[in-house]
Amino acid sequence: MPTTIRPFHPENRQDICRIHDAAKPHELKESRDPRAFVPIEKDPEGEHHKLCQKLVAVENGQVIGFAGVHENYPGWL
Image (cartoon, rainbow, N blue to C red; front, side, top):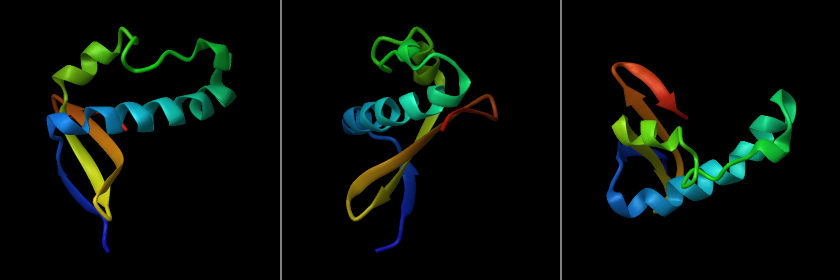
């Protein structure tokens, strides 16, 4: 089944948290101390996420990725 992109639905919040929190330690590994990891639910920058127009990538009925755009700029990938 192909991957589709669709608007975020509130019930996708846990999927976004799962994806973000699983990816963040890998992102921090090369950039700074991985102990600096903060789950999205506790991240003060998470407030910016609320301002973004959010899209999710869905494959086989499961959310596998997300993006957020604010004022024509990518805010979350």
